Each structure stands twice: as C-alpha cells, then as structure tokens.
Image (cartoon, rainbow, N blue to C red):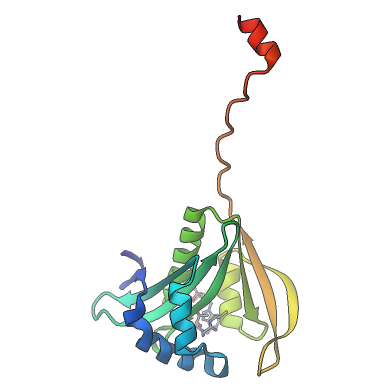
Length: 175
Ligand SMILES: CC(C)(COP(=O)(O)OP(=O)(O)OC[C@H]1O[C@@H](n2cnc3c(N)ncnc32)[C@H](O)[C@@H]1OP(=O)(O)O)[C@@H](O)C(=O)NCCC(=O)NCCS
C-alpha cells in the first residue's frame, strides 16, 4: 500500500469492495453507471488493474480507478472520487497509481475518453500530461454527449539494444 495523497492509501480492489463500488458508481455516473455485474467483470477481466483510495484513519473507500492493458497500450477505464472527498488530491493519486502501473507493464501510450462537459476530469487529465486527440460524437448514451479522446505517450526507456551478431566477415577477421 502506498500513501499518495495526504491520509489516503491506494490498494488493489477485490470482489469484497463491490457493494461500495456499486453505490459510488450510481452516485458519480448516474445514468451512465456500470451495473454491479459489469463492475465484477471489470475487476477480474484480463489485463485489468483496479485500485481504491482508502482513508488511513477509517479504512473508508473514497475513490477508485481502473486501467486495462492489451500488451501494447493502456486505457483508463474509470476514475472517481466520492463527492465528500473531492478536490483533496485523491483523483490525482489514483491517476498517478494507474500511470505508474502502465509504465511498469511497459505500455507505450495511455488512452481515455472523457465527456466534453466534464471540466474537473479534463483538468485532472491535462495536468497529468494527457492531450486531446479527437472528438467522438454522441459517445455517451443515453445522454448523447460527445467525448474527447485523450492520450499520453509514456517515455519508457527503450530496452538496451542487443549487441549485433557477428557477420561472416567478422568471424573471418577473428579467426
Ligand atoms: C474527476 C474527479 C475524479 C477528480 O477527483 P478529485 O479527487 O477531486 O481530484 P483532485 O483533488 O486530485 O484534483 C486534481 C485536479 O483536478 C481538477 N479538478 C478537480 N475537481 C475540479 C472541479 N470541481 N473543478 C475544476 N477542476 C477540478 C483541478 O485541476 C484539480 O487540481 P487543483 O485542486 O490543484 O486545482 C472527480 O471530480 C470525480 O470523481 N468526478 C465524477 C466522476 C468522473 O467524472 N470521473 C471521470 C470520468 S472520465
């Protein structure tokens, strides 16, 4: 467990967190909330990595976020901070944890979609270095709201190059 925001630790989520996640989803995303079944699938899906932000003092879950990785690139699947705990660094800490994990698994880029009218999330992502790539018309249904697609290129240092195999000419010179 790592303390990334004051008084909050970030740790992986498990099925035991589902009832609380289900409640937060409806609180934060309304008509666009994932069902409990969808959340359960996400938590255990291939290439998925979900973390929660927990109050150190009480153990209460105050935020959650998830990443998917397909072997090349990663995608921010969701991020949310409960209403009573927003604007104290929890979202930034969760995003930093996702980006740290993306780097660890070697993702080249991180992508995401965000509602064009979601200023708090846009600011959070732009502060982390994400840039807008394009606009998807009517991406969010049933609200019929557009999404910005955003991306962040991760600067993973390239793997050290293997020394070149000796050519036949080299072999002749050596012998
Ligand atoms: C977006 C969200 C996750 C941010 O979480 P948070 O814990 O409040 O984020 P932080 O406290 O780390 O804030 C980081 C930065 O985001 C921006 N931000 C956060 N809330 C903001 C608000 N209400 N208005 C404007 N900017 C805001 C600010 O730039 C902020 O930095 P600052 O406080 O130093 O100015 C939170 O507002 C949320 O859960 N929203 C509902 C769910 C949602 O829309 N998720 C995103 C789906 S794409």
